[in-house]
Each structure stands twice: as structure tokens, then as C-alpha cells.
View 1: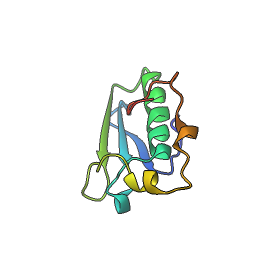
View 2: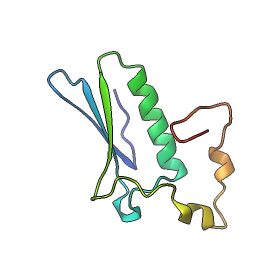
View 3: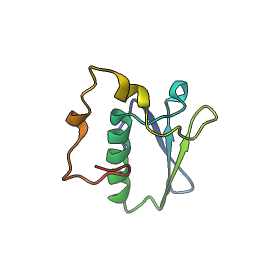
View 4: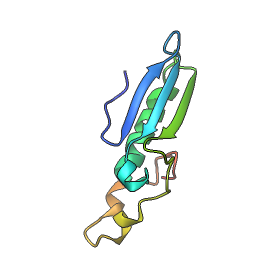
Amino acid sequence: MYSICKNLIVKHTGNNNEILLISLNRPSKRNAVNPETALELHQTLIQYENDSNTKIAILYGEGGCFCAGYDLSEVSEENTHLKKYYDKSLTAPMGP
């Protein structure tokens, strides 16, 4: 149904599993989004949109923080190649 993600916790709840809970799960980084997390979030939301049984999705963060924004430590690393995650033909919840 929904994929197991490294940086997200994804689960159904409600009487008929009509509620999808999506939790950012990088509390050590204050749930800052890196390219891998953005891709997981994008894939999860595509699955949600294609599931006629799930009526609502709720996005929240683990560890007392919703989201600190983009993970700037990813950008500051010299060996990070963000271009490999960029495909301007795709739409995503946080840009292409």
C-alpha cells in the first residue's frame, strides 16, 4: 500500500483507514528536509492521491519539531550533488 520510508513514518488510521498520517522522522535534524526526504514525501503523496479510500493526509514532525525547513548541512557538503535529485519535469510538494 504505502512504502516504508527511511525518513518518514507513514501509517493509516481511522474507522476505515481513511486517514493517512505522514510524519517527518529526522528529529536529530529538527525534521529538516533533505533531497531523500523530499523524494520520499513526493512518492508518498502521489500514492495518497491515487488512493480513493484515503480521505485525508496529515503531515507532522517527530520529536517536538514540525520542520526546520531545508537541511542546509546537505548544501554545505562539498560532495553533495543536488542535481541528481533535480528533474524539472516533475512536480513535487517542495518544488521540482
